[in-house]
Length: 259
Ligand code: FPP
Image (cartoon, rainbow, N blue to C red; front, side, top):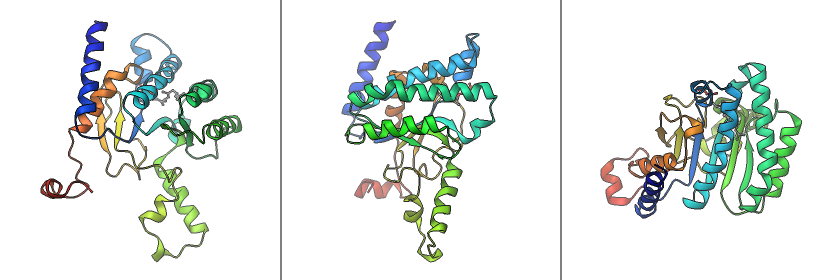
C-alpha cells in the first residue's frame, strides 16, 4: 500500500515538473475539516486541530522543497472563529503560539520567511511578539514565504485598508485598485494563483476576498489532517490543466499568451 502511494507520488511529481505549466507561485489553503476528522475517530475537536497543526509542516516543506512554491497562505484562525466555544478558541490560540515558537528555528534553517497576516488588534500580545520575532529572524531568508493568517477576515482587511486611505486624506478620484491593494496586510505578496479548500465546502469563508479575484479554486473532500503530499500534487495537477483567461477569450490566449 505504502509502496503504491510512493510510486503514485513520484509519478505525479514527475508529471507536475515536466508539464510545461509553472506551478502556482502562491497557494492559499483553507484548512477545513479538523473537527469532522476528530469526530469520525471519537476524538476531541482539539485533537483534530492538533493533528491539523502537525500537517502544516509536511505540506509547507513539500510545497517549498519539491515544488518550488514561493508563497503559502494558511487560514489558521478567522475573525469569525472567535465565536467558537471559548475552550476551543483558547486551544487554537495555544496551538498557534506553540507552532510559531517551536517551528521557528527549523523554518529559519530551511530558509523560509514568516509573516503574520491579519488584524493585529484583538490578538494576544504574546502571539504578536512571537510572530514579530519569527518575522525578524527570517527577514533575510530567500525561500518560501509562509503567511499565517490569524484573526484574518477578507472584509475586515478591506475595511482596514479603506480606513488607512481615508485617514491619509486621499482625494476620492485618486483612489484606484492599486491604492487599495497597497494598503492590504501583505501588499508585496502576489495574489494567490491557487486556493485549496479541504473537506468539501464550496465557499471562500471570507478568505483573501480581494486577492482571490482570479485565483483558481480547488476543493477536495479530503479533511485537512488527511491532506498529504499526494493530495497537494493532485491539486497542483488540476491547476496546471486550467486555462487562466483573466477576462480574455481562449483565442486571445492562444495568439498572445496570458500576459
Ligand atoms: C477548520 O476546521 C479549521 C480551523 C478553524 C482552524 C485551522 C487550524 C489548524 C489547522 C491548526 C492550527 C494551525 C497552525 C498553523 C498552528 P473545523 O474545526 O471547522 O472543522 P469542521 O468543519 O470539521 O468542524
